[in-house]
Length: 406
Image (cartoon, rainbow, N blue to C red; front, side):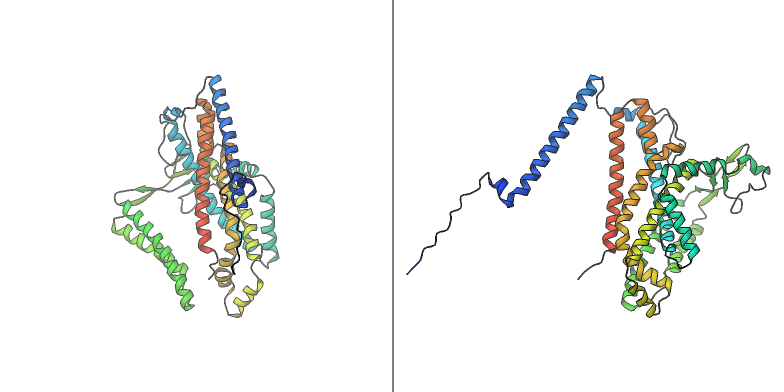
């Protein structure tokens, strides 16, 4: 005896499934949201074009190839007022990147040191770091930039004081560095024939340090033997470059600052505007990084430290080999945000006269050409790309230190 089972026939796809079927509902919502966004964007763009046309303007980026006709006081690449606006914007971008790189580096050093010292058992040291962190975190960064600028401009001697008018005015580091109210003058490298070989040797030394660090970590994991990594890396950095330097006949020399007339000549001139912006952003961001480092260390169980001490590890080894590697998984994600904030806060450079991207493309170029929309769009796009590059690089590093589960 056979029994027949009635199964509902497949009725095919119906439009009602886009709303009532959970398999399609999420896709339907996303498509509707995307269409709504595109319609709103098209409406705003259309209105902008119509309003610009009514004012006799059109969207045109041809102004970038016109003569800039203004000077930039801080330059990494050669630039004159006869160069086009795009080169002026490039100079401003390089100045922004310079502050971002120097600021992130110094802020990280300050933040790590301050964060670790805040956990010190020495009461005075911990309190001093607490005062630093709370002072810088709770005062706007613009005020710190202006404060550093005032100290550098008003608290340092004028160049003429180095003629003997002020006994306190003297050059540092064997008369090679002059710190004045017009800026700091340091020795500048002079690249001769064969200097590129020295630079290549230095870059290869950095690559060698990275390779040795990877091998040293594997060696430690396999054998438990801790090598003097610092001295070995220092030797890899210095010895090959020095040997190549002498073999090539000393192709790199230094130009030292000398007092001529009412100012110093020669060497590398770091203006107070750059120093004030760099130091203010570094100390301000470093106070936030200090709290991130402190919270990351406190997130590690005290049992880890006690176990390391029980194995006979010294406190410095315990911090470097046990605590910090685990704390990095907590520290890196919020640290990315601080790097992004420092890079974007560099746009406050206009307050002290440092010519960055905001001061060139979004300042003088915008005012002289009248191309407000184009300049703003370009500046937003550049900041977006820079921020995405920083975020992507840090995310790659974050994945490399992330706990790898079996």
